Amino acid sequence: MSAEDTGSYGIKTILEQIPHRFPFLLVDRVENCTPGQRLTAIKNVTINEPFFPGHFPTEPVMPGVLILEALAQAGLLLGMRTAGPDKAGTIVYFAGIDNARFKRQVVPGDQLRLEVELTSARRRLWKFHGEAWVGDKLACVADLMAIPAKTADTGEGDAHG
Image (tube, rainbow, N blue to C red; front, top):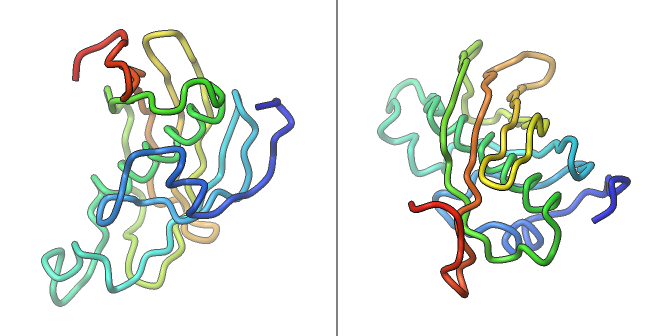
């Protein structure tokens, strides 16, 4: 991919790029992407989410860990777009979170805008700064790390999951 790739794409392309599936796929659309730099994605939060009946029945709130997971998936999409098509099938593990802060609740009807910036990309560790927004209000901010581990087809790679 070129550094100028700023196009948007939908769920079909997302499903081709990352292994997550319902109920754990937390990105609905990529709004724009500049490989090696940044990506903006959308998660539409609906009352039909499988976690709302238990979190919480009378006051549904998206769990903070799932907001972080959505940011991690957006980071994975940026990492895969940056790595290029020859890395398709690479298994990538969530490796860490630093400086996570929650600023507002995310509730049914919200549209979560996931903004991630690649801050470091080494062979064995990718680092991202992520922010989750609802409209013009910051919902969550965190620094995320991921380890590209192995390809699904060959089992070759650098880390163990």
